Length: 176
DNA sequence: ACGATGATGAAC
DNA sequence: TTCATCATCGTA
Image 1 (tube, rainbow, N blue to C red):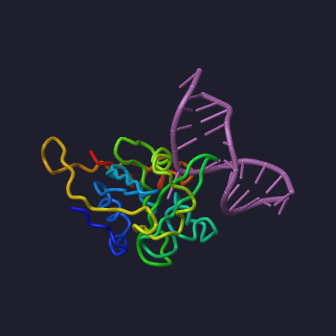
Image 2 (cartoon, rainbow, N blue to C red):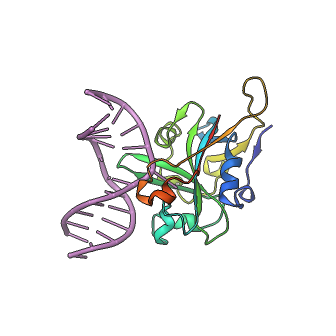
């Protein structure tokens, strides 16, 4: 089973999409090769009031993709070295996105973008095969022989600047 | 615990 | 135009 996730999958409340993305596959094609790994960690950045979100201080040239349509990729550069991969969710003009923090054995958002060769060339593109990067439902993941899993809710990483209320919100989801 | 490393955005 | 900061990671 390989079902490509369409933009409408992402056009829902951010927390719902964040949970729904766990267990889905991140798929990358480049020069005829395909790689795909299941998503096991994400963070949600939700709306104008979220002080940890890039969109909190309004639209800028960097974050404008977050204000666009669901299903677009928001890719930005941090710490002079790493690319972060997000997918935009929710309605147009409502800034929200899901940061992909872990896929397969790759723990950490900077490692997975390096492994998948993701950089600014993908920023603003729709997540679809034509872009070379998209998301798929490949069926349930099996853990311990059963087709179930647990979702652990944790604070987001590296957002102390948002202040205690927003830095401690359980907007990071990990597939256990 | 800290340095690498450069874009970003706010202040000047 | 300068400057502090940053949705990180590897090495110590």
